[in-house]
Amino acid sequence: MKSDFEKLVIAQKYIEAIEKENAALKAEVENQFRMRRKLEISLKIEKNRKEKMTPKEKLQVKTDLYVQQQKGVIDSLKRKLEESQKLVEQQRAALIRTKLGFANEKKT
Image (cartoon, rainbow, N blue to C red; front, side, top):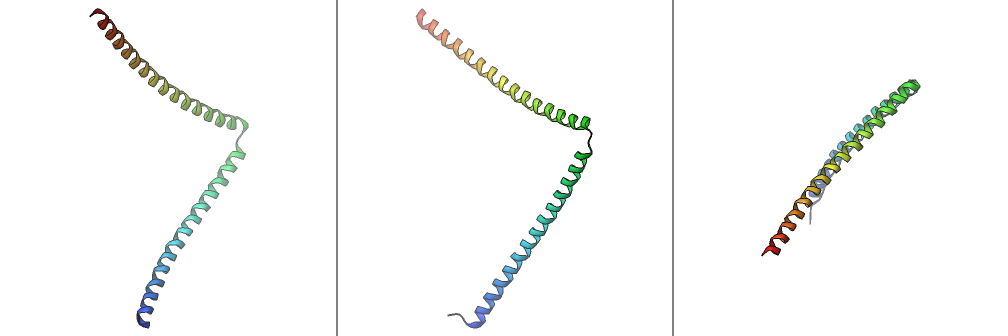
């Protein structure tokens, strides 16, 4: 059985550990709060900038986004085409080997 002093030491260490954890959590919460404030401010700035944009500028932004999306689609389709061409070449080579194998078997 533990003495009162041992229990007091254990409780004190437990309290210290909890205080350290509490300080770490408090720092994390403060950091998250600062990040949130920065994001809110940047969002307000972007909203104000968007409201001040002329219709021509808004159209240009939409056009740029559309072009960027289309470039992504084109790149994706190019990769798929290249993969398909490689597969076709492999299958052609396999077909030629198979035909040559049958031709050699018929001759013998």
